[in-house]
Image (cartoon, rainbow, N blue to C red; front, side, top):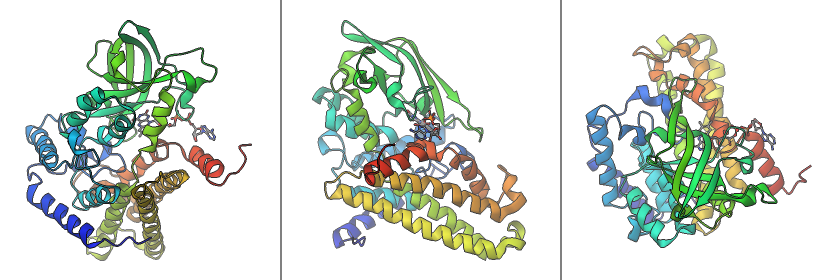
Length: 412
Ligand SMILES: Cc1cc2nc3c(=O)[nH]c(=O)nc-3n(C[C@H](O)[C@H](O)[C@H](O)COP(=O)(O)OP(=O)(O)OC[C@H]3O[C@@H](n4cnc5c(N)ncnc54)[C@H](O)[C@@H]3O)c2cc1C
């Protein structure tokens, strides 16, 4: 493996950096109070889906202007074909774009629509579905939510109960989803529903629908997390009519489509850069005069050791992420390696947050206010990282995947 840029890749990296510096709307500023609603791959102080619906007009317009600016180059959805508004970037260039956006600390646009629904439609959608949805995603006009989990059906997703019954040209949907990230800011959701309750095996009776969240009978209720933010929601469906034309793949074949969607989860590169940024800020503070005010003096030696350890782990995660990218670039699919990356990344996030908490001692109890060290970044991360191992599959489930699919160990 050679992670060094080729001359073409280096030129592309420079082009991206220049583009961001010249074109990012200056009025669209980071709002550090918003840290509490962020997911691991987001840039501190931004949440594009929420920003474009913000009460503050400057923020709203900034988010929309940034989407249009990126869309000019096809960089909202860089991996989409040009005919659907993308830039047809390969896996490495896509990764360079993401890396530079994270380093310059500007938000990406359209999240789940770009990263999960888009590639799913490209693989399984009809031409009509692609033409209806992909260009709107690529222009940054619409946000999508992922409606898979239900109360009682998370790791055991195939047990889901939300029911869809065919009635003429529509399905009628009844049921509930939960933990749906950013659904309150999303126009559409992809939904797993049960269409054959009598199927011999539960995953054979599931279909995959695209649902307009403005449809009558849909209720989206934000859930507050332990930080006081509302990063996810419950969604209730009561006799919601969804055109059968919005089904992706065949009826009762939705499990295959859903597994493909989950396989399109990002490489984790964005989170590595975010962790490195957090650690760099801690290191800079340790070297500055401010350290006398905030840092525990009794723990400096141990802290030095811990910071060095976190630096090593961030490098390991960076290499794991690049390994996934290089597998994709050579036409492969990261299999259990994606589980290794996800598991290591989630647990590193927790260790890194704990290091920051330890460094600041009693100051780490403060979650808000100008007087907090590094705008309470590590405190917010400490609380946010608790949920990280659940985001893309729990740690135990990831270890099961590594053990059985990766190492070929017996299931019992
Ligand atoms: C911040 C956040 C955002 C999320 N966003 C979304 C979203 O946008 N859309 C969406 O659909 N879902 C979302 N989720 C839900 C997420 O996918 C689920 O939390 C996850 O699948 C785990 O399911 P569960 O919460 O029901 O826990 P459970 O599956 O009930 O697990 C509980 C515990 O049991 C363990 N366990 C379960 N099965 C096994 C097993 N076979 N072997 C060993 N241990 C096991 C788990 O490891 C865990 O410790 C989000 C979750 C979080 C925390």
